[in-house]
Length: 410
Image (cartoon, rainbow, N blue to C red):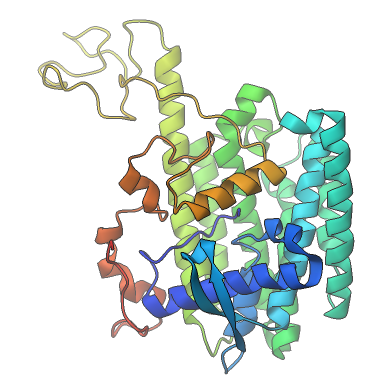
């Protein structure tokens, strides 16, 4: 599964996590029921936001059905969402996955450079695109912004000197259309303008975060990256992300949401975590790369008087035998991480990660070199340090509105 909004039970209140899991499993089962088991590979975290938004605008909870035990839930049964919002999320997920696979085929990325693989992937993408378009039609949703996004993006990438905001335009329009249609499904047409604004903010943020995460790999492989193409450094990219997040937050604040808790937790708080996670990893990678390519004896932090070439002021540095903490200038560089190949291979490996509760991590995963405890904590944060954040996912200042805080490490 892919997406930038990846919460877990350590950072969501107990009731909200159960609701989120119900939407995720509902999306997976809707894909299976209408399009077969193979289509479950397109299940993604960001696609289910469409289902969450539809329920958030409804006074009553989305209808649920009891699902059988599943390996991804630790062989436990669960009550999963069943609604038009879930079906819209399934349609969007199919169309997004079709576009992603088609893009890999067109660029000849990794295994897609092989003709048999490219031919099979192209046929699969066409089948997913047709299925997503047909499902969208039953919901009164015009999928044109999603189906045309890939072609528009390719044209922009070939255009002379496009701006960064212009490059994120197709993604913004696609997400805005999907978010906006949830107002139609929920019977709240007055929310449509704010939902489209939220979609543009989220689409821009997702595109930028994807570019930040792929920057090092794209530079190494020579692949197109909007940050490298526009000469945007990490500091400037962070400002763009913060601005997009502020726009997203403002749009969510304008929504009429009878059930706002999960929507705010995912679209406001978890997107903020996604930004921090992406830039922490990108900065550490850039530092390690700079250290590895620096001339011997020069360091990367400059030269102080009295300690030539060490990068530390006189009298400082690390005690003998301790070395440098990971990520600090002078530390041994981490093993270069492979580039995510995308497509089916990426989805299968991510599914295997879920089946093993995070113990297995593919070569391109940011947690591959972490300890077992680090791998199990899929939030990327200290799971025992988030207990004080329980109220941040709920409106009001008087405490948590949920069933409790699931911050335990058990």
